[in-house]
Length: 112
Image (cartoon, rainbow, N blue to C red; front, side, top):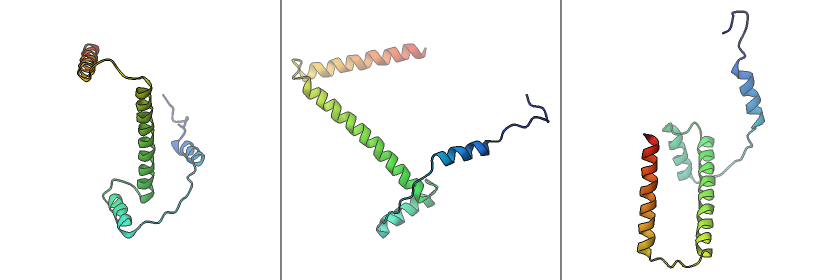
């Protein structure tokens, strides 16, 4: 508990230090008029604070997509390297369904 003599530190100096540590680089881009209008409409809808905010979101989403794509490619390569299965497609599907049911039951038991 604080007394009137004891002041709590304000968040502003802390926030200012944080912001100066993550200084933004600037980049100018050119867009056709239709794309520029689209970006402006997304901002005016209130979905984004600014066109820069919108572009940052697009870049982040692209980064996430690239990570997922790389993981998928790695899984495909792992599958190719594992060789040909002696199980039929039906057996593989049945095994996967069993595994999914087993995991769902374990989750339900854990939630109780």
